Each structure stands twice: as C-alpha cells, then as structure tokens.
Image (cartoon, rainbow, N blue to C red):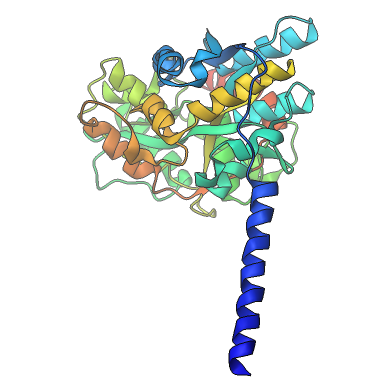
Length: 400
C-alpha cells in the first residue's frame, strides 16, 4: 500500500514538473527574433565618459556577431542628454526622421513612452538578459509595469575631497555640517569650500534620504517643507561664500586645489582623470546625508529604448540591444568610465590594462552606497534642466 502511494506521489510530482516545463516553454521562453529582411538601425546617444567606445562596439557588432551580417547600425552623437532629448522631441513634433534606438536616461525614456514614441518593448523583454539585473534597476526602467528601456549602466554621486585642503580627520557627518564647515572655511581662508555639479541629482538624492520623491519642481513654487529646507541650507552657504557655483569642471578644480571638495557624478571623476587632472591628492567619500535622513542614495540609470518604426526595423533594434546589453559587451563598453555596467558589477570592466587606482577607489565608494530606485520619472526628466538653470542663476546671484 505504501509503495503504491509513493508511486502515485511520484506520478503527481512528475506531472507537475512537466506542466511547469510546458508553462516555461510556452510562456516564458521566447523564440529567437527572425528578421524578414536586412535592417538599417540608427542609434542616438549623448557624449559622456564611456561614449568614446561606441564606434568600436558597432564595429564589433558588424564583424563578430552573426546578427551583424543582417543589421547595420549607424550612430549619431549629441553633446548632452538635454540636446539629445530635445532633438528626439523636435523630430517627433515636426515629423522629422526619428532614430530607431536611443541610449538615454531611464527618465527620458519614460518621457518618450508618455508621448507615444516607444515601440512595444515588452514583447522583447524575455529576449533580453534582464534576469541578471537587480530588481531595483528594472524598477527604475519601468513606468507602472511597462519597461521603457533596457538598462545598460548606472552612476551615482560622490564627494571628491582635496586632502591637502581638507584633512582626513575633518569628515562632515551630514550635509548641514558640510555647509557649516564651508562657512567656517571661507571665514578663515577667504575662499569657497565646495560646489555641486548637478543640482537636480543632488536634490533628488537629498529628498530620497528624507523619504520624499523629487520631481525637480521650483523650490519657490513648492510648498514642500523638505525641499525648501534643502534649498535654504544651500542658498545660505552660497550667500556666506562657503559654496560657489563652479564655472569649470568641479573634479578638476578640486584636483588642482582651487576647491576643497565638490559633489560630482562618478563619471565626472574618471573624465577628469582622462583629461589629465592630477588626482593623487584626492579622496572619494559618500556625499554627506541629510542630518535627519536615511543613508540612501539615488542613482542615474542609462538604458536603450526602441522608438516606433516598421516591424522589421524594430526587430533589428531589439536584436542589437540584446547583443549590446550582454554582460561581455556592456562591461567592455562601460570600461573604467565611472559608470557601473548592469548585471556584471564594477569589477568586471574589460580592459587590456590594469584598472586605474583612482577607479578602484571610486568604485569602492559608489558600490557600497545604498541606492534608492524609483520608477522612471518623465516629470523629473522634463523639469530637471530648468531646475538646474534656476538654481545656477540663484547661486551665482548670491555670490554677487
């Protein structure tokens, strides 16, 4: 009797396994994309610390991948993410020629989605290796439950410090104490102490630490007390000359000893090194958090999105994205740029040379910070450039 029960149990388990396998095969496993004919795909991107390698990657796609025999990818660069987004939006409004693939921030991709410019990327989702992506990263590339871009890399902010001007033992425990130290530094040295390279990214991070979502609204038009509080601390530091609005690369200013420290993106640090800045006297630490906030940090995710086109071109774009976002290719493209490749980790950057010491020190800080992920936010993307301009004008006027 016992043996018969065991036999029936085994039959039930086997049937369940078979059913699960059938579900996986029918619903989770997607057939390879097959193009009806050769496809010409255009890629638009903005210049940054890793974009110099884009043409090398396209050459590899055409010569090393089987798909490269049927898909031709041509790229166009823009000087900034703002210029890139404006070019896409202008082409859409004026019935101009749109790109097929855009490499941009996930927030800008959400804006394209809201304007009805994106192809149905969900149908290609299982083709792409999203299983290796952190769930938070995937969250930052979705609007609701809809994927708006395939994540490729991310970066975060750090505080770069010149240790000759600001000794190791003097490490601010909070943003408020950083501002206080800046004001004291100016009184003693008659020179400014720190700057911020990206106001909107800094405020996004500070608001996240206070449990709030920041959509780059003007602090004068907002009734949010936390937003006004952050702005008041920064404006006061500018008025007292401890904070300055930098007119050139903040990382280079710190390296050259013109500023004691600066809040910069991780890619800006590596870009300054690439341009010849002597970073030997610099150190990276986490940006001091808000005094009453949690130790969480926002990250900026870059991804690849497909714009609407004909079916064959969209398929070609999807195949290219699958290749470009693979662990081997994305890590080689990201390299030692200060960005972190998705799914591979910072230590997987591919290079024939040893990683720069500066890069290793930078990544140890960036990857140890607890990142806070939000859904891709088109409102933040639409407002952030105006917010940056507004804050820059205010800070410059405060300096008189």
